[in-house]
Image (cartoon, rainbow, N blue to C red):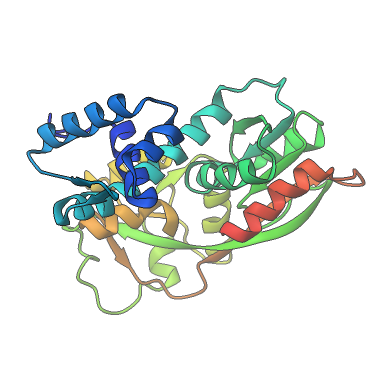
Length: 300
């Protein structure tokens, strides 16, 4: 959906938050490395764009108006999301010469790693992370081969040749289109019925696919996927289009559930899974990678 032309740039919102925090346009300008007149001009442009008065200036400093405080509250999540985006893109842009070489499964890379990188900067301000985004099976291969120093997987069984540490837990969620016959269902879907239903699935080797197969292991009649797709976004789009149900990470579908474009359906049985950091068996994990482990354990 195209954004409204009234949506301001991230830098202006970040500057407004600094004024709110510091109580001074001059100190906010200094923090952002610009002159006070330039900061004042940016705030005036923001006010003109929004059609609101955001800052009250006095001899004692600057403070937000009631409208400014409301805009600042909304802006915090936007600026935080922009910082997450920046950290994730920086990791993807770094090549294999990066000092910290990390591989992560798709769900972990998309929904967790960017936030970890923001925390890592506080511990290692000069750290450069080269991130490989692949499925869990390929993460294990890269780690064993020494192509990366640390990996993160979501598969139910750790690949051979690896040591591991649990960094968190995730719960898989069965989701359907709002018009699907299960959307208004009050009792959980039992495993035999789920097994017999063609699902929209990730490709073989995906941690999510492996977990779903482990949950359905032992069922006498397991249907073939209605379609196999290589990205979570593609699977969500297929479910929203009514192609079929899917089982995805709760992290991945939280926004769609809030918006009502997808509906969660209870399932009989345990749909939780463990998120693990992995490294080559017998190899020492250096301090720089231990810092990555530490921020991962704090965030999940």
